[in-house]
Image 1 (cartoon, rainbow, N blue to C red):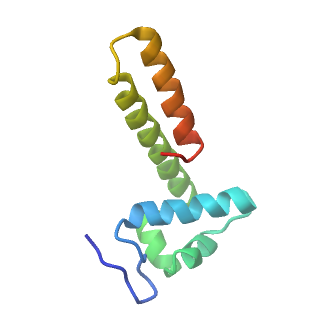
Image 2 (cartoon, helix red, strand yellow; image 1 turned 135 degrees about the vertical axis):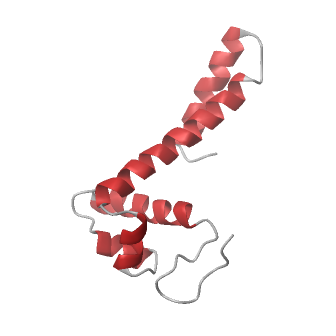
Length: 107
């Protein structure tokens, strides 16, 4: 696992993927996907654009990975919630609550 980098060109978090995706997500929400540039994402991650391009060759690839992360988080939370009960009504309630918690960023 990487330690925090002090040099420009490397993400500063141990989990580079999550760090990059969180920064990109914030920019996409604030500015919109179309108006956000790869250079802006790289700057927000304190990386060189080429370093970001090495990981994601297009802005669309970055968005696809962001969507995959959201699906992974929702799936994990819902499966965990579903396992918390054997009663179908309670499972459904738990799954809905877990899904909403992830969407609200409470997980």
